[in-house]
Image 1 (cartoon, rainbow, N blue to C red):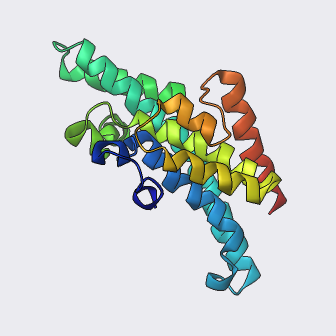
Image 2 (image 1 turned 135 degrees about the vertical axis):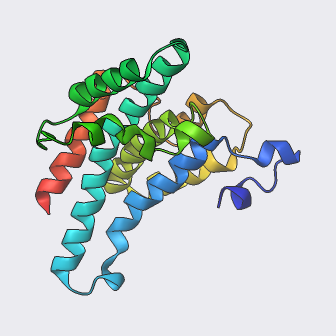
Length: 200
């Protein structure tokens, strides 16, 4: 979609939406499209369950993204760390960002290596935080859509039509949302998701 909306920009390089904003575009549609999933879930209970799973994944993903980002920063700023230090640091992050709901007694060795499941650490270092940025933006886009669908979609298309002509904060602004990662704003968005979940 971004390629179509930015097709009239003068230079080819202008037409490539920043990857962070491309993630915003796709994640926004994951949430906005939920309002139109009925044809795929004719059973109302299945539809409700699918929406709950989507929202659960949204909230569950944010602490994991923060964990991976913090972990890789530590790895690269401590290049001489030992295997034991790496395990200990990941276990501390897991404690800091985890819920404590799962009891890993006897399975600590599995938990201390669980970061290895994230291929971004190997293939695209320091890229994973973009998913967190985009997910927060997508929540804001969805909230905007629920308040005024027509205006939200117009803002969405406007932002994507700018390609690589603006900075990421300017593209978020064009989309009608804030490029803001303050604790207060993150809580505001998380509270919105939770309230929508509880309505289901």
